[in-house]
Every structure is written in C-alpha cells, then in structure tokens.
Image (cartoon, rainbow, N blue to C red; front, side):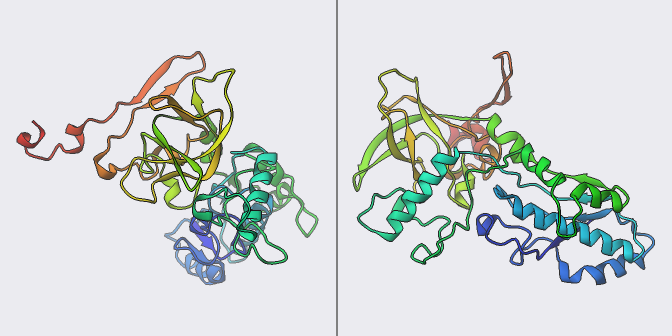
Length: 336
C-alpha cells in the first residue's frame, strides 16, 4: 500500500489530529504519486495492493470524505495508467460520533463566540479558550477545529459517501465499478466504540474559581488522554439521579499535579452539584479515551476495564493495577 497526504483537508478537525493534509508526518504527498507509481511498476518483486489515506479523527462534515475519496479514486486511476493493478482503496478512519445534540452544539458555539467577542458575556471555556474559532472577531467567523456534533454520524457517513455524486456525474459506487470493483476499506473504530463505553469515577470535591464551579474527579488526563491533543466535550452525570436534581454547569478537573489536568475545558451541564464521594459518569468514552496515553502519570493506578454485556452481566477485561505492578522493578524493601 502507498499512503498519501497533501489533500485540501486542513481545518476539518483539530490541527493536531489532521493526518492527510500538507502538515503531517504521515504518508507521501500526492504530488509524488506519479514517480512513486513508476518506481513500483519497475520492480516486479513488489506487489502493489492499492492506495490509502487517513483524514484524521472526528471528521464531522461529509465534504472532507468526499474530497478524500475523490483523490483516492483518482490516484487509483493514475496507478492503473502506470500499468499497476491495485485491488484495494483504504479511506482510513475518523468517522464521527455525535457527542452532543445539534441544539447543544449550536448553543455552545453561539455562547463561546459571544464571549470571545465581548468580555462581559459569560465564559463557557476554561481561561476563555477559543477552541475551534481562529478569528472570532472577523465578520465571518468559522469553526475550523474539532466538532462534537455531526449530521452524518457513524454508519450514516459511509452510506452518504457510497451514494455521493462527484463532479463528473458518477457516484462513488459507479467509479469503483469503473475501476474494476476494488475493495473499499473503512476503519470506523471510534464510530463503533465511542458510545459503547463510559468512564465511571468518583467526585473528590467541588470548589469555585472566578465564580465558576469546578468538580474535581478521582481521575486525570492520563485516563482521558485525548485532552492533551485537543479539548474534548463529553456529556456527564452525577449518580444516582434524583427527581429533585437542579441542573448546573461546571468545569471538570483531574487529580494530577499540573494545571493542564482538566477533564473538561468547557462547562459541562450536570444534573446537579455533586457531593464528595458520589459516583460520576462520562459518556461516549469507549474509543480513544479508554486507552490513549494510559500511562502511570504521577504513579496513579490504571483502573479496571469492565465490559457490560446486553443481559447486564459484567465481564472483567483488565484488573485494577496495583502499586506492586507499577513499581515491580523496585527493591522489595521499598514496597514494604
């Protein structure tokens, strides 16, 4: 396989999670395609299977995949023109998950833009982080970062792409047929797993900073590592739920000893203000959040990983770590 980059795909998600535009360490630039195909065609010992790309993660808009597919289909045609016989096209992953409803997402963007334009408006992000707004004071401010709602989430994105009509009037399926029906591979890991998992933790306390409520949790971004790349937005709730609950917005803080350890840098709507020791749930964390950067920062133990089957049966996938496992190479006297 030859993996390519250099497509006009910047701004569709967080810059640090964009992996098929110009500024990425992955793949060959599409401008090199012709010379690469010639190089492979002259070496009969190489079996050329096809082309691939990975657009990034949480690509909420279909136009990004439409552009990606158009380029990969075109690259396959170019490979055939060099005498190669590719039988596979891999469009990679990044299929989106709707972490929020459209109304919640639009309301958040509206409130954030209002604050970035007017200091008297209410803050909705930690330290007034602009997140996806790069030019909020312009006459046409556009969101160019990671989005948390999509009109075509999960499998709907694939259905849209297969029937998308390109500029030449052909659909994706028709273009695939014209190429000899190569296998189309998708890698929808996040789309399959994100909503299948939750993170269950405990409240260690609450406080107020600059009139904002902060809920401190018995976890850190070592358990929620995608926040180190770009701020995440996950729905959350305090358990147990009560009929008398009064909703409140709060920032979520971790337990690690550095200021960047924020589980949520945007205000999260909770069902009520929690008390120390209560259970706390973060939703849609079955994908990257469960394992990404799952190191032992500050010597904290990694929690158990439990799968809940349809009938309610709990299956232990990974036991909780012990200090002996973390410091197992230390002298026994230090662990006593």
